[in-house]
Length: 249
Image 1: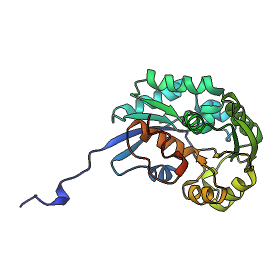
Image 2: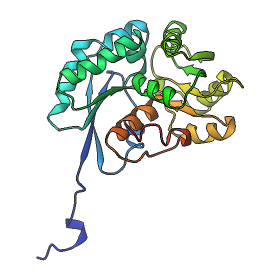
Image 3: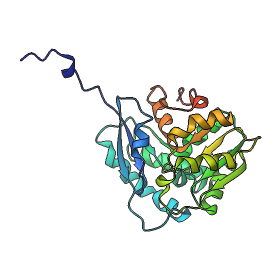
Image 4: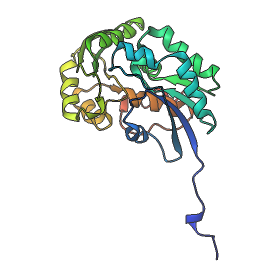
């Protein structure tokens, strides 16, 4: 039997991204939509914690030891970069904690590392943002922690809106999120940030950017593009203002 036909020339050489996700992540499929064919995701989860989404949970899922153990869990498949995919867990204790999480992943053996909130920092600085609006699915306390994190960057949060959910963020429909983005927007805001990697946003970015005429930055978008930038790969998916943000990483 001759095997000189295209079907036997694969598979495409695989390149990997390691993902450290909170135990309740339910949007793996959305993450894959940001990636080219040759990139695979390798997930590890933080240990289950019997608490609702809250400041307490954000602290638990960003425990240094747990993050290091999860990092080691994905090293065997040789990812090129490892991302801590949790917005609240990476902003909960400010910029110094975000940096400490990156250091913990590198100490555990990650070849390169980033966090969702760290990717937000990169976007804010590259786009030179000083005034933004924010929407979150969290309660008021956790939302205020995000506002404080942005304040450390010198960014003023002009409007913030929150859904007040303690879980099940992945079940929120697009119409609800779009309405909240519009409600949170302010004419003076230079961008709108939609927080939480468990909140679906992929198909909203393009139409909301058209409607509001400004960047719509979302947690999964920022994280995946920051990873692709470090891998020197093109950005995939919607978000015209971010096209050049991570290319130089």
